[in-house]
Image 1 (cartoon, rainbow, N blue to C red):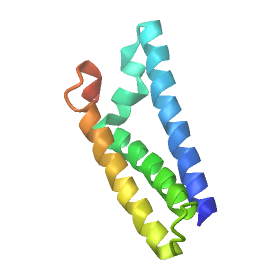
Image 2 (image 1 turned 135 degrees about the vertical axis):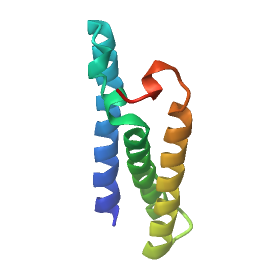
Image 3 (image 1 turned 180 degrees about the horizontal axis):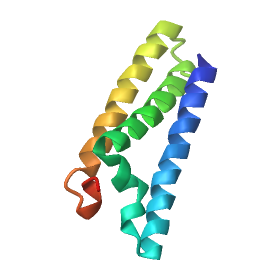
Image 4 (image 1 turned 90 degrees about the vertical axis):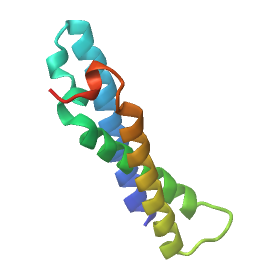
Length: 102
């Protein structure tokens, strides 16, 4: 399961970098309609937050000093995914012009 958490975390981090760097690049060029954060909307940003949360919580549970079973680590990872998705949605709501999809 460590490999699954690692791959999911890598995909989430790449998505996060695309949103952050793509948004900065689009803003610098004055073409905010091409901002990936606006294009994917709140649900897409929540999905990226869920991926990062799942990967980080899963890896943290697997390498914990509490010697958790794989099923308990999976439960922690699912809770982390939910928390990451909720936080990404909450943080992006009402944050100005980039919170609304194009």
